[in-house]
Image (tube, rainbow, N blue to C red; front, top):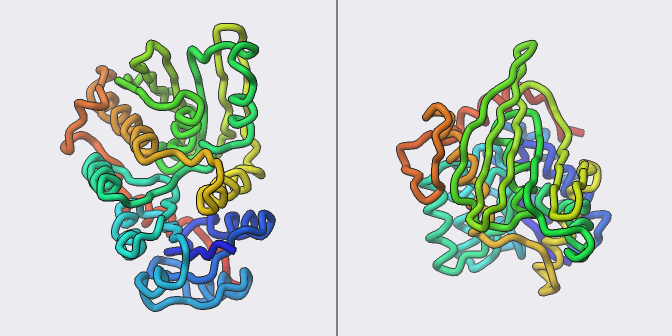
Length: 313
């Protein structure tokens, strides 16, 4: 049994992941460290509900008792510091989406990976069964992918990264530049559209939506036909946990490498920079640390204020 330690239980993901782990029967949470906004009652409820061995007093203690760390706080600016104790012990970490939210932290992840750190992540949508099933169709039958269009909704980055990673799961890497295309708004809610050009001539577009949950819907245009994929949100965690288990057990798996995960973040950073530049094309390799980034502490404050108790028994 693969032993998992989780750092912070800010969102519903630790609960959903624990349920998927129980269904898969190959890994389980054994410990938790929490210094975020969830109360002691909620942390204790999480421990009892999912049969954890203990609540740890430090991340170092947690790292010493598990095989892999899950970093699940909703302030992405804390992700790398939370991962450090696991990495120092040579243990892999899974960092829940968004992996990071700035070019500076992208560079930090790159450097860690160069030094041998194993950083897995980040969105369950990347590993969706619907994407796996589509890619399993022989290219001679379905045609070569030319364009992918995807939608997601709740907020721009924390949720928008899901659909960008899902597009990456279909298209692979090689994005060159991004252009902000515009915004539609009604009833105080809005959708924003971005175009992505790849170096191989293929393209993608993603739509974020702020103010309403929207399903993950992907349209794939190939040289032979057009396919519509609607990702089943009830099976996303299961698909992700299965791939992490495969990785940990040395089996064939679909876990993306660090470069692919970072490209998804850079796509969204380039999109934000393009929006700030009135829709100019922004190359991923021309991003600067002074370009717009995503504020993790601000998101965490808003999320904590809006979130009611989730884990207390």
